[in-house]
Amino acid sequence: MVMARQAVVADVAELVRLRAVMLAALHDPTDGPVDWRSAAAERLRKELADPAGSMVAFVVDRPGGLAACAIGVVEELLPSPHNPSGTKGYVFNVATDAAWRRRGYSRACMVALLEWFRRREIRVVDLHASRFGEPLYAALGFVPTRDPSMRLQLG
Picture 1 (cartoon, rainbow, N blue to C red):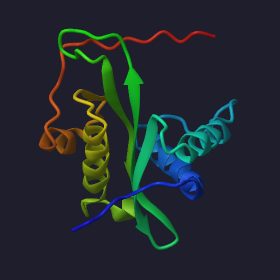
Picture 2 (cartoon, one colour):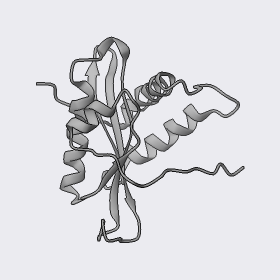
Picture 3 (cartoon, helix red, strand yellow):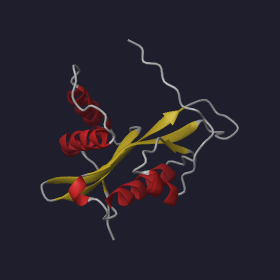
């Protein structure tokens, strides 16, 4: 059985590398005029250093680095009929290196992340699924929602 562990600050460089792996798999540009990698590393260092923080990552190790990760955050929103506490989890950046896929590593990271949410009494967890991740998320109990997603890019 594959076991994931909670990431620590020393994992930041590998977490940023795996974010680039995920973006490349989605055909998103991984380089541009803005140094997103340094900004992501800075944010991860800050969040992972805070044991009571709202962001967490779970990882599976490989020789010399990380094979997979799943990162999640707790969001504080206004209560609603489907979420009376207003607190929800959001999963993002689930990634596995190509050479380490099909071994249950992303599943192990997701199971650990979902347990982390449960311990914090989070009852609603959202994510945006790629076609690559949909089978895993469905197997874990995620279902499509009616909520349409829209975005406005300011600046």
